[in-house]
Structures are given as structure tokens and as C-alpha cells.
Image (cartoon, rainbow, N blue to C red; front, side):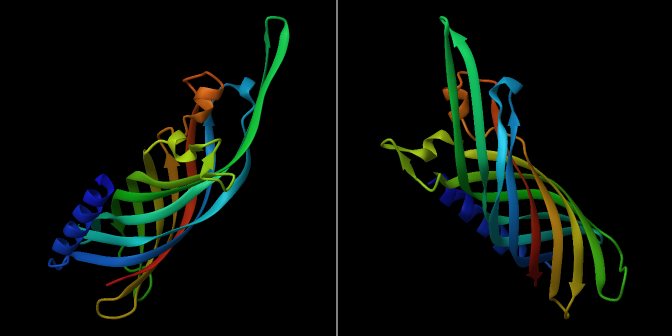
Length: 224
């Protein structure tokens, strides 16, 4: 229900913005390479065993409040994740206990980015550069671990946080293709700011452990 309300709100805002001459609406495809970042003590031996190649697709909107400055937002569906291993050895009552595992996590989010875009003047005929900085509030819509959605009779989605916050930093170029059509291509760094996985806190009994998503995306699209 919450996700539907967010979607309707964003679509309503985008529809309202299209009546303004300073707004450009577009479609974007965004292949993404993501991997986990660990906030944990060395004794747990967390390792990044592999990155995840995912895809982002969605709608973007740039609202120009000055000639070379725009407020940018949109609604993006994006896949993230990565492969994690851990190994914790401890002594307990004279016995050596080892807690270890390896998980291939795959997560899907609906992202609501909020950022500032700075545009240059033309660097070549019909070509301008842009730089982007801001954040993104993401809502998890699906998850699986080792290609399973249910493990030991429990949905794996319960171990992951519903919401995620990202910082985004990127840049790229726009190419004028007609009176009102532009192609764009850029590279964006997504740095996770919030813990997304509570499983390791529970299995290793340490509330200070954090797993955060990091990634790079190649953003390609068209604006009208």
C-alpha cells in the first residue's frame, strides 16, 4: 500500500511538471554493478566473493530552476546485491565453535532519487556535460538468497530492511537530437548509507555489524 502511494505521488508530480516549459521528462536504462560493503570487526572475516550485475529501468525528470541548474528526480526499478562469506571462530567453555557461511544475495528496489544537476554550456555543437549529486530513498520490493525466496520455511525477505538510503554522485553528457529530444549517457556511483541485512547481526550476535550496498551504474536514456 505504501509503495502504491509513493508511485502515485511521483507520477502525479511528473504529470504536473510536464506542463512547465522548464521540465524535461525521460526514460532511462541503467546497467548496474553492485557489491556489499561491510561494517564489522575483522574477527568475523567478512569477504566480498563477487559483484552482482543488475539492471535499472525507469522514468527521470529534470526541473530547471535556472538555465544551467536542475532539480532531478524520478522513479527507478533497480537490482542490487552480491556474494558474501564470513567465518567466525571463538572459544566457548573450552570448545572451539565456528560460525560460517556464504550467501549470494539478490535485491530489487524501487528508487526515488533526489539530486541536483549542474550543466555546462556547450562543449561541442549540441553537446553539454552535467554533474549530479544527491541521494536516493529506496524501497525493497523483492529479495532472494542463493536463488531461494524461502529457506527453512521462512521468507528470506524478512531478513532485509524495507528501506534503504543512498548517496549518489555522477556525471555525463547530453546530446541534442532535435528541437525537444536529447540523448544522455553517464556514470553514477551509488554509496549505501543504511544497513540492509539484519541476518548477520543475529547469527553473529553483534548489533554493530552493517551490510551496505555499493555500486556503479551506466545511465543511458532519452529525454523529451
